[in-house]
Length: 111
Image (cartoon, rainbow, N blue to C red; front, top):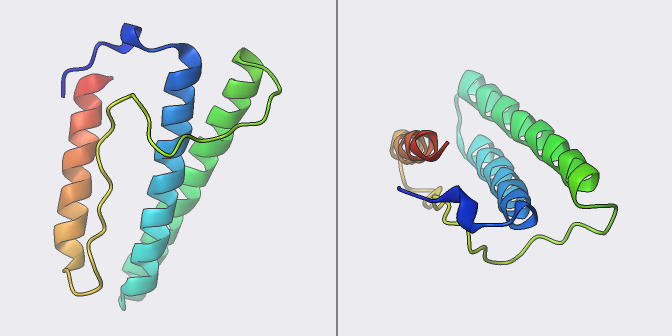
């Protein structure tokens, strides 16, 4: 994914980042509910908690840089972000995690 970051304003970028963290937290939480393996379930819960911390940090940064106005996440963002797809309950977790790994690699290319 090739993205020219300077095409976007700071507020738009921060809202997209916050939205991404919120969606990631939700995805990890839903996956944790689906797995039977206790170790994997705890790892997924840990990842969800990390996403929550990231979101809190970004919300603080938003308030510092943009102001104290209410943070309203857009339904869609103009900033291209990888789609988070946890599939359905019949999809193997390994397939879902492989898809997430591709998303992480793609974001690494952007940053």
